[in-house]
Length: 409
View (tube, rainbow, N blue to C red):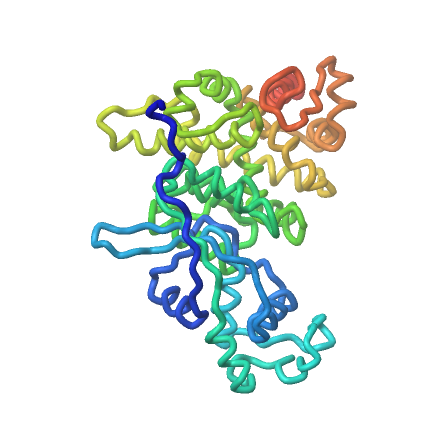
């Protein structure tokens, strides 16, 4: 038997159950934590929240929670919520008297006794329901010693229900102690009035001294592109910024991806798919950030944090403003195409200060219908199917974007 014939994770997951009141106590005391880079916790509407509470007070089953167990240097166990954030924050919000269950006319309650709890807060519930809420036992799966397998475990857990996007998971995994990845998340915020956005802006400032980068006029265009769009759930807006970065540095990124040893050292599994390429970009950015304090620094292969903040973001924001001014009907579903041309324009050094409406019409028309304009320019626009490399991969698409950007110049 060879030495590598062993499970990937040394200790199996454990399952246990804990009362709601006990879990909420641990949550309040900070031994159960929701990562700052996780999905925003205010995505559920009042009806969805009310149906969860109905299930709990009627002792109906709800999905299990997944916690990752970490033990600090003092031996204190802390649990990071990997899956179940929406449910946990809803339970806490109801217990803290921050919302009341919606009326029976607004929710498909299944219990014939819903008249006793519809429209009520925690305090207004009959004692039997308050007791059922407090004593309800939550099924909790605890994961230990994940090490380099954390990212893949996150993905597999989040394949059902309302899954985290690849970008949600990517930022959660690589965002810790990385000002570059933090800035990518910060750039994706389009509505500063949301509580989750406020918390993250404060976190970014406390951890890295980062200020919210959007100026008023550019933010209006950014908000107009994403606000109240179904596609905006999760971190899709920040993915657009990351996509633009990748387009601007696709050659450098490709060199990393072709070096299996480098990818291995970054701790990424790259199977030629685009999600893996985005993982590598963030992993390399994190490595470059950490190298500043390392005795053996990683040479900057991708854009440095300083250049991204001081040069690339202003370029990106100005393009968003101008696309909003001259092409206000742009479809948000074209965000990757738009990001490709924004990044390509940075790569080839296009100066748009003197562009008028007629000049902006060309990239706007390209974003709307990339196949037609690219053909007229004698450049093939590959129709990628999720792969990074190959003649129809996203790398080829970004190479085409650079050629098209030169034509626009």
